[in-house]
Image (cartoon, rainbow, N blue to C red; front, side, top):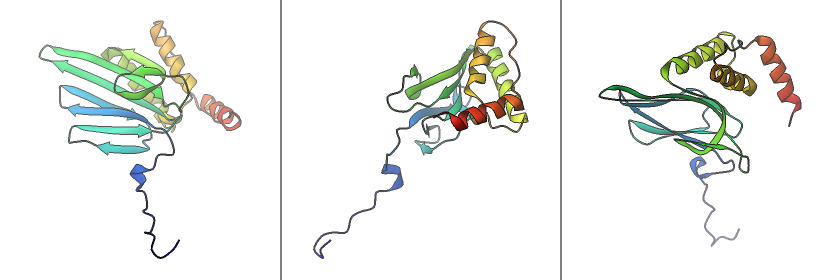
Length: 171
């Protein structure tokens, strides 16, 4: 570098983009529209205003996204999705308020089913396991059993240990 050249400017962390993130738009308008995350490890969070924010997740991250809305006559939307954030080039499903989309591990509609999923998440966390670290196969199992009207099996420490071992040897 010669003395007449300006010093290179540092790029702020918010402008560095080495990993493509999955963005989730969250809204909270009390008793009208409530989009929130039940679990997940945010890589970034951007506050847009006092009612809206965008949470971002790295590829492979798992998060639980709840959407609820009402009008003058009561609840009109009650949904929960458990989603794995995808890497560029991976296949994904589109999902409202999630860009570009994700690998949907579980999807339920209606408050009774949402409540059952929230209870299952609580049960996983009771084991001392962060729901974001639970085996993706468990969330698929929960989805499929609930869709078929069957009782899902509980997540176990043994199942979690097997998942951790499998994850450590799989690319």
